[in-house]
Image: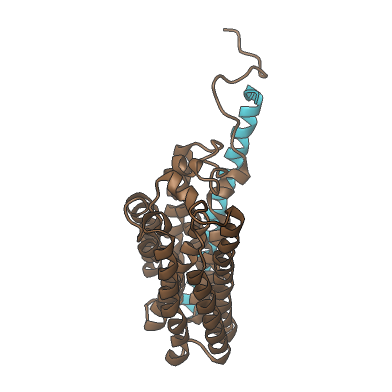
Length: 320
Length: 45
């Protein structure tokens, strides 16, 4: 039977995905925050762990987080294609097939959990598995389109990495581990809603009930401010539990005051509101959105500074 | 955009197979090293 020429076109197929497309599935920017907070939890824990096993534990958390990101992208491909912010993602743009992304996520998460269990302990492995399932199924499938509290409840997934790191080092959990969880958990809504205030059109188009879409920008701005009033003192609590020292305390107090100040500016602004109902035009409304953008940018710096302070203070005495 | 040729599809599949093989090899090496470290810890006491 005559063979088709090697250069003959392959019927009805898309260009093959590139390695960087699979890397993009892992949401590398989110992964970097996860790695950082997991490492902080591991270093801050009182238990000792061999340096190589510590590196494997952090690697497993990173791979698990990436796997959760890939599963999220696989499930959300059609929705991502509707939003300006996400339409360039590999599945949304059609570079990676949905099934391939899903299989990639499942296999990576299985490997990460297995390796964590074998290398470190099954408490950390179980928490990692729970985190992946919580994000990929509970948040992505159940919560995201059901409630404006989606990011509040779903934020637990992003808050678990320091707890996993702690469990990896210590083999058990303690108040200070849950304190780190609580700080990230309370930080997530004002951080996410600040972004949502100036990207709410995208969420409305995709039918996602983010707070500015579901309850309006005024209510969102108030809730951002109220969360900041909880977050600022909560972030100081580690000083009293022994988790954070003087450096952490200074950063927590100053950063907390700045956070509340920026959240107050957002509350007093008209960020997220549409033009047309008032005399001012689009430029003025966009100028108001700057307060939300400033808070969003500062929130990232704030969380990074808090955990960096913990990392510096604890150093690496817990690593053998 | 032109459709990919068979050679391009073959090359892409080969690249993916190499990447998969590399990932599996990395996993095997990691498991081996973890085993060595944990055994050493147990022997040390």
